[in-house]
Length: 212
Image 1 (spheres, one colour):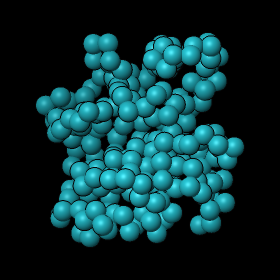
Image 2 (spheres, rainbow, N blue to C red):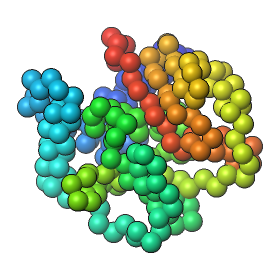
Image 3 (cartoon, rainbow, N blue to C red):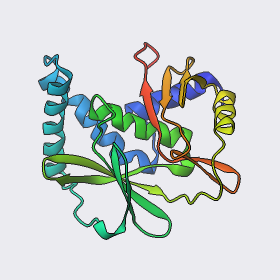
């Protein structure tokens, strides 16, 4: 795949014009937030902007009946700074993410779309949203990957560099041609199963540019 083709593919996915099943709800929700952001366009404080964006998201979820209320908390697996993980069945997990790593919800949805483009073996499917007290979580389903061996981070580095991502520091990478940052790729976020790498927790950021 050429760099220009990949850039075009990214543009189609982020704009919602690609037709990929697991992208649908992610794209439609993202498109709604982009289209209704005028109410918050004058808010300069990042926290205030996200609060206004979350209010619009809640209204969208209410209007479209997108609340998920059947999560079995007894199937809890783990919890990180940004999400809670539950085993759904023998092949998939549910992840509840409150977007703490992202300045806004749109950036989080872009991360999901980019993950699905670059790493389809661990594609996210947005099922809806969950509310716990005053915290809103996106509920995504992802294939369950059981590691069979410890991940060699040098192998991860080589793989990413061969695909245009330069290591900038620690576990963070940057693709200058595509203007993408990819962070936090330590051995708990990239698993190895039978010699194959599986990127289960990606953190993509788009660098603002005329390309997108």
